[in-house]
Length: 348
Image (cartoon, rainbow, N blue to C red):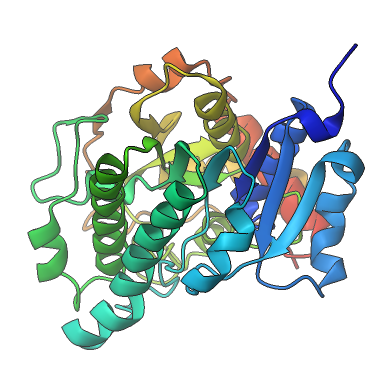
């Protein structure tokens, strides 16, 4: 006789309505797991409706109110759970590319401490709740922010904290890189102290279809890019494209990695989630293949002679493939992203 839904282990997913978390919830339900999603409010029925409509949600999905900046809300969220998938983070990259803080003290108070302290408190609460396995959504930002850049990009790569601090008030993405680096290092330290099994997923720019009417940073960056407004990560003159190669990954690949890492007892360490490295010119070319965006003109490269000069950084994503992540072609990710943006009303 098959076990009832109540007999299956319960997995806590933080920030359940987020772009990535919604896909994680969907895949967990598809695989027969019970899910408890944390949300900031239980009153927003419209925001919760897409998740409640997922197959299996009626019997296997519940929501609990929790704020990642309020450690007092963690106990109820984690009680009775066998594992934690932590996707929520209180820090974003400014789309205008400007530093989000005007002083080092402001950056520490508004960005660094909430993310780092919140993660530490959550892991401590997980240990108290009897949870032994934690899957943390980190970022490629804790791997790649260094000068000079890493020759080979892999799980061995770490961002340079001192360099990030030196650029904190100069570059818009420096604060995010510093926060994600400190957050991940703190998570590794605390997990070891508490005896938690920690697996960290480090995704590149995450694109693909959205399950909720949510405009995440990467999808909004695509809209800005084709309009010649840069991406926030990389600035350019108006009406041009940055001369930069960028790492990309589909949201379905990232959610796949989280669920596989949760299910696989052999999963360990960090996982670079980056399927492709594509120049911004080629990104826009792929976007213009879509019927809804063919009217956008080709844009010149923001370089002294209008030509590409950016070096292509090598990567080793074999560990991601070894986990069993099913890869999705970049062109498909772009097409599905645009379909989703149009369906949600984000394309004028």
